[in-house]
Length: 525
Ligand code: FRU
Image 1: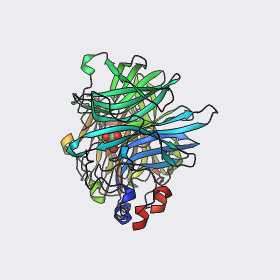
Image 2 (image 1 turned 135 degrees about the vertical axis):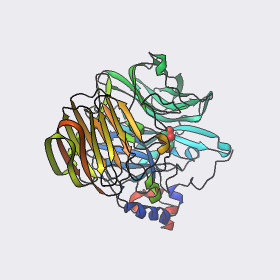
Image 3 (image 1 turned 90 degrees about the vertical axis):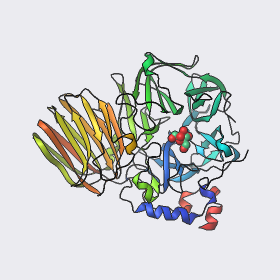
């Protein structure tokens, strides 16, 4: 079988630097580029990968296609941080340069293995994607190590799992590894030959040699809750606040009421896992984020205090984002700290964001009708609002100018919160709907926490009981924040401008590509 050839299957190390460099310069002038969320210097970013704390630093990798906005040849890019908010310039961590990953170094997660002498080894599991002519796929499961000086090396033992098991299609990927007693488990997102999505479980004694145990039986108490879907991607598992938590990204599920209206969606299940019998008894199943653009999340391995921090692709599918014409697509969410409260997974921006606070405005008042809370602020801020006396309809308009706004509509009578991006002038992905609604027990008081950054909005309600992630492409780099209430309401707000904390300028080939991968690329630059 011959590998599928297509112009989008080109690795950065085989290409002409100037093509990439042109993209970078085009992207750098975009006012939509986030300045404290991680986005690609050019090309397309998708899933977060290998998120971990290792050697006293946070490491985050992401899926990256450097040459445009296609889901082409995927590389792993690498950024690191001391505090989860200030990030280094990206470097190229893995390029698809072997027989077992020749059509993409696909997603995976990190596992920091404690060695007998107490040292840690950082293992980066990933999927080698293979795509042949006639659209036939195969997948291998592989590992690389991250050294203390930041070098990523693919293991000579790869592929650890050389092909997909019988009964499954070529869509088996996205390894997540964790310990169970003295053994290890690897979860893989998978599709059966009958095109049913599922999670496969492998076991190992040394985290290197793996044997298939079988499919995870995700047992819902209520049959109506069954998820379905033709493929489950990016499984994650962790324990939090006494619960077992399973997260995955199913594709092909049907919308249900206000839920699952995105092209692809993300669910979490709280319950009990048994890694011997391969069962997960679900007590609660929910959509993880109620916005438009949120997919393939993963949580950090080895956090020093045991906190659970999540990163996700603030995007989904292929919706023709307005930034596509500038040669870049997507960003990651801001890192979110997870907790469980009242049987719900809650998410809020990590507290370290406070280190980035710059200009601060504060205000409070009482009344009904329209109030401009802040005006002319750069689209790079955190805004927290406490409302008291919430009745009838209250709308918070973000990114507002004469011509557009992103509206959060709080309906106290219907007990519903809606995010509406149909009043933005750049409209896209309309086929999936321009509003996202969530039933919510709106009480007299409500807390709203908003992050705005270039072209992303993340909104958290009441300590993150509800989260909405949305890409939005405002016309102007400055905007107003307005509150409009049909009844008398008391409000208190804080608006903090956020200092830029990620690289947004073009980088040199020497800085991006490690010496050992500098072959054709440097010849041509
Ligand atoms: C999820 C996903 C993963 C895959 C990766 C490829 O967005 O499709 O399943 O490993 O993206 O970029």
